[in-house]
Length: 477
Image (cartoon, rainbow, N blue to C red; front, side, top):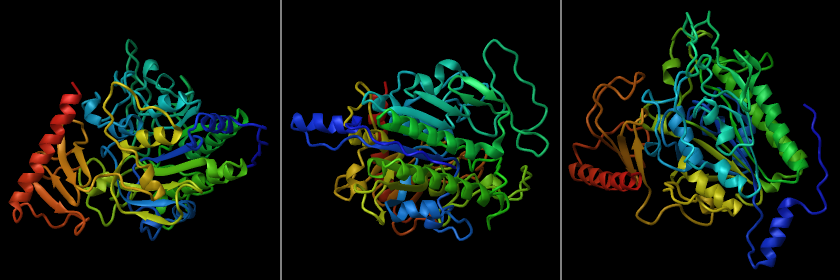
């Protein structure tokens, strides 16, 4: 892929901001470019820097060696829609209306409310070019698409890659005689550019390559305009069904799943290379993470299009997507920003997806949204190695069910409470259990339930969870 290097203007937009800040007595650095790369259903152990022995991810490994790698980074929900809503708004998913099925579908009429303020809206106020390349999954109707939520452009799928063509109110529902996850039926998901469908069904074998090209175009265009950019690159993979290009199919030691992840790693490498070619390496924060843990339903001999074993791994964590065990909620997080994030750092302190809105706002010198409660915290000091996210009493975080119907548990410091389950957490996790208590510092795999042996600690965790949840509910009225 050829690259074009643009010569910098005599006085850039970022330089003007810095000069203006200097004249006013504010020595804050200029706002950075941000590339936020979001994988779909990637497991905690699916990168070689996180323990994979069969998937080669040299570009992400390079990111980790040149930046910070988090070992306790949590999503706000273990399924797609609420996790993405929380990333973009900095708020618990319970604060927002989500389809009762847990995620939005092609026949859903709802989406992320326009009253919510997204990262894109916050950064656009600071002069950023804002672009989404990839998966949205926060409403497919015209009034709910990314262009209405602060993004200047959108190129991608309105929802998951296993879903079919959209259903619009007042029109007949599409008829699909087969299950889109089986070999004889290609999913009918549409590829969109801004508000128009440009391909349906989308040809998924070339999707990662096309996403990469579009992401590079966004960066080049912003540099040509001499403006900072926020590129939200939300690849649809490795969510099933899996598709890899000819250049990657059959090349991994971990089957088609590994092929797909290795092509995603290639994509990251292309983006890092373009950032360097554009001369903006030290002005650009690059973040890589996943929306939730691996979809273990497909890590078996299930009859999926490519023959099974199409799910990832969260080892040594327990379980995966759609559950509130660590394997569903704890994901890889790598952040790279030369000159600002010290190289080769491993961050063991917990952080959450909701932290990114206040963090990016602080880096950009932007104000937080007014009139709404932001649940995340600025983790800039953690990234830069100059401070902590939490007070001495420790990390406190509410855990909600994947269908957004209520509480599933609570994390406080080293302790985790997982509330009793009757009837299964989801259609993918049907077993039941009573209240569980884990010491995650000693037992990250959640194999040793301490609820019976530490009843006072269990009761204390429930009290603290209830009190914090009440604060959220009151603020949400």
